[in-house]
Image (cartoon, rainbow, N blue to C red; front, top):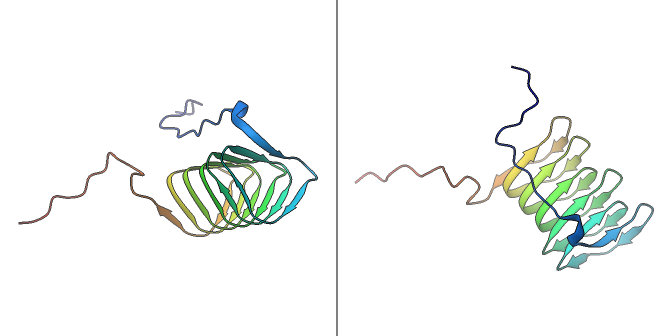
Length: 133
């Protein structure tokens, strides 16, 4: 009854070797950021992110702006809208903004304020009811 085995756990696997950009703790960026590869944020970004790869916002990371990326894992803070294929809000995450994603996982303890829109293809096993003739 109280086992630790998780079932149907959606996990965004981000290979840390593919992270080409690190915004380190104490680093502050003002302005929009775009990149083709993945980025990890431990510092502060005030601007929008347009990342073709994955984004990790670390526990000390703060983003004030909209984020568009393939996969997003948030341990830290985000104030802005999210558009991602896969999204994980970890236990220490604080998010304020609207979400548009195919897959969403919210861990217990994560704080979220906003609305969620699930993109088409979010659950391919669900089928539309047949049309009436």
